[in-house]
Image (cartoon, rainbow over the protein chains, first blue to last red):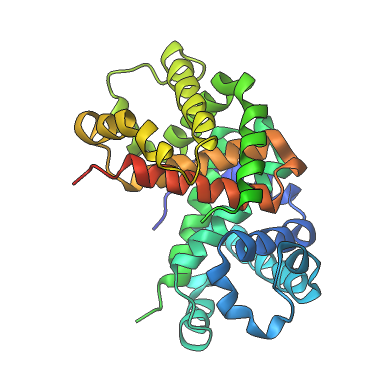
Length: 148
Length: 143
C-alpha cells in the first residue's frame, strides 16, 4: 500500500488538472523515441521515425502519445489502489507488447521533463517534482507487477 | 556517441548557462535531494536547505565543471581533465554509481524548467548523452 501525504495528493491532482494530455502526451512520447532510440523497437509499424523532425511530425506517434498519457488518468483517480487499477494493462504490456519495464521509467522521465518545460520552476517546484515522480514510479511499478 | 553538431549545441548551451551556474546547480541539487532523499546521505555534514551557502557553492562548481567539459568532448583531454574529479569521486566521496543518473535527471528537469520550449528534443538528447558520458568518466576509477 502506497502512503500519500496530503501535500503529495494535492500536488498530483493539482498538476494533473493543469496538464493537457493532448499537448504533453505527444511531446513526451516523441522525446522518448528521440532521446532513447532503442524504444523505437516497439513502433516499427508507425512509419517514418528516421529523424527528430520525422518523429515530432509523425501522426501515429502523436495519437499514441495521447493514448498513453491519457492512461494516467486512471491512476490519478485511483491513487489508493493503482496496483489493482493497472493489473490488466500490466498483463497486456508483458504478454502482448513485450515491453521491458525499464522503458516505463524512461517514459516517466520524459513526461517529467515535458511537464517541467510547460510549468516552470515555481509551479513545478522541487516538492511538486517529488510527488509527481513518486506517482509515476508507482504507476511504473504497477505496470511491471504482472510480469513473470 | 556525440556528433559534431551535438558538440556545438552543447558548447553553446552550457556557455549560455554558465552565468547562472550557482542558480542552476543549486536547484538541480535541491531537486535531487527532495525527489530522492537517499542522495542526502552523501552530504550529511552540510547544510542542504534551499539557497544555503553550501548548496550554492557546490552547485556552482558542478555546473562550471560540466560547462568546461563541453569544450573537450571526444578528445583525450576530456578524460585527462577529469582525472582529479574522477579520483575525488572514487576515493574520497565513494558515491554509489547509480546516483549520477539521479543527479543527471534532476539537471535535465532544471534545464527544462528554465529553458522551456528552448529545451528542444535535440538539446535534451545531446545533454542526456553528454551527462551520461561525463558520469562514466567520474565513475571510471571506482574499481
